[in-house]
Amino acid sequence: MLLGSQRLDLHHIDLHHSRQHTLRLASTIQPDLIKRQAHDDFSPIGWHLGHIAYIESLWIVNHLGGQSVQVPPHYDQLFAADGLPKAERENLPDLTEILAYMAMVRSRSLAILKSPQPNQSGLLPEQTELLHWLVQHESQHVEIMTMVLALHYLSPQILGRKLSEEKTSGRKLSEEKISGRKLSEEISAEISEEKRSPKTSGATTALAQRWSPLAQAKIRELENDRVHVPAGSFMQGCDQSFALDNERPAHAVWLDDYYIDRHPVTCRQYRRFMESDGYRTQKWWSEAGWQWKESQKIDRPLYWSENHWSENHRPENLLKNSLKNSLKNQPDKNQPDKNQPDNSAVCGVSWYEAEAYARFAGRRLPTESEWEKAVGAGTQATLGKVWEWTDSWFEGYAGFRPFPYVGYSQVYFDRAHRVLRGGSWATPQWALRSSFRNWYHPHRREMFVGFRCAD
Image 1 (tube, rainbow, N blue to C red):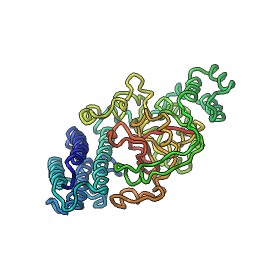
Image 2: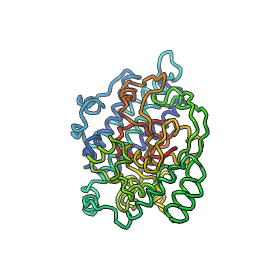
Image 3: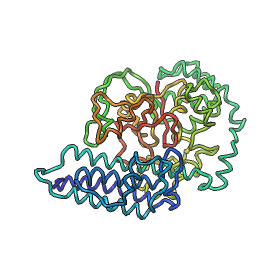
Image 4: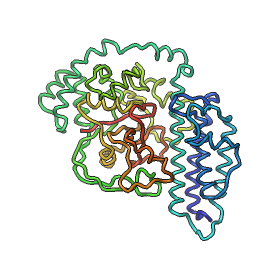
């Protein structure tokens, strides 16, 4: 047997759960969205389904089994990551044909995994790593499919005329809401000077008493929503068989002491930045960030509207009807708090926006090392709400070894991608862990991504 019976059962369960999650999502999608590209930088949902099958066929049927699957000749080019440009991936088979392709590959894969192998009584370490990688590869593409579906549901054609009018009206925040700008900046400057102290000064407290409730809210955030992480070393990364290549090897890292938010920045907190002209104040932005914002005419997070926490605009609820079955296995803690929706994590921000907010607040983004260490110090309760930007470039750890191929992680070690940590409400549970590393260009904000601050 290629796998011992007990180990086969465990891996079969993982493969099965991952596939069931994929199929539940696919079953909820309107047929006309399967082949449609929602964004120039993201492939259609149907392509991701076919790519999942193509990769499984490549690594189990071909690589492990030395066999092949009889499919139309153009499938290899169509569903390979480097086969066609994203703009040319809309000429796809029907959903039924893609699902049949997935089922055929899965059947062959399981037959190979159960078949006798000469001089091999169990699973080799590389094969264990490969099966774990395949499960997580599928999960990553399912989350991207969920994101693409959210982008479809943000389009006027899907949401209808009401949202179209709201999205294109360009109305700004009301003057009544903006009137507290000077006060907000005054308080932010005061807090910035004292940011390293877990206690607030008498002057700041007096200011909070004078200017209530905005300043008091800021003081409560400063005192109660941060954790102090003492100086010391910790083991960053992971060497377990389920770890991806960019998580390895585990290694000791020393960090000085620091403070980090217990939770990601909320919509309520981010609104203060918007109401204080944060999107129109250049001093908060890096040069690259300001150029991006101006060229793209950005004045709010992607998943935001004037009533951004309403049933219609949280990305979780945008997809509520179409995804309710596919998200059944997500933990309740990952769903938005319907009683206090403005306390939900802000979602759909670029790294540039996160950096600008941190400067406005007199703080900074954490490094990925700080983020990972802090998760073990009490912030893990919020893991899985949004992906979180860090201040780190995506690079390989010392001793990095590509697996299962160079193109999975290594080609992105280009100092053009920032590291995201954590996981979102759409991330399957088996992909949530403190060592997991995601990566995107700093201008990307289509993911379900937010951030937390440090100092």
